[in-house]
Length: 308
Image (tube, rainbow, N blue to C red):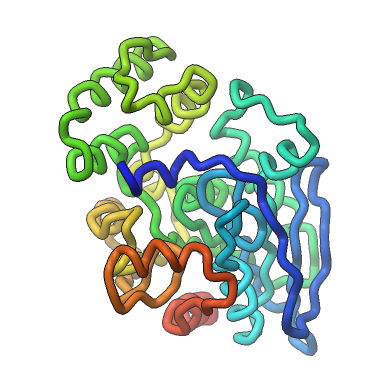
């Protein structure tokens, strides 16, 4: 279960100082949404990319406490260098945790969708930008594809799941802890049918804790294969060949559901966009190397797609 637990890590986010010169603006979209807008100078009506982060209390830079890799920060800076504006933001649970206002029982997956839509609506009223694209990473892929249905010009999924979250976790357990698969499947079925699961193995407590069950239940209500078919805009699907959290088969499911989507598998790229030459140990260590750049190929693929 060493990788599937990434979905449920709960850490306080950390915002790191900019080390290069970029034109940035810190914005509060709502009382719960704070983020950083980067707008390239001397570009008339640039395209804006809204970046939606992965699971857990991920901050605008892609970081969590004790897990500082700046993946989203470097992604935004790469887009900036390609004359694309971006807005990236702290997930609401970052602010709630900092203010000690977080109650796990009250977290709903729909809250993340509400936040992404609020950001999209905010920038649709901003005349500086010609078009708005949404980039969703990991869990943010599903959030972003639902938000993008509300008037985005295009959608980009990076390491997004192609199945409902219960099926994703069961598939991971089949590889990593097969003895827990049957219990997990029955527990998810109970949760889906009754809104609560009670007879889960202690080995699955991180997934089925009573406090987090309402969140998982609301997450289970969305099927990426259905949501992506609702998009009538250009779609780009990206996965890294070295991703140890989201298998390439998930991207293939999204591609099957959306045959007209552009589809890119980036060799040697892991879940947080870093180049991995070696084994899983190197892969895992990269999650906490703050100055390791993201792969240039990712930036070029996204930039070419947006500018097309």
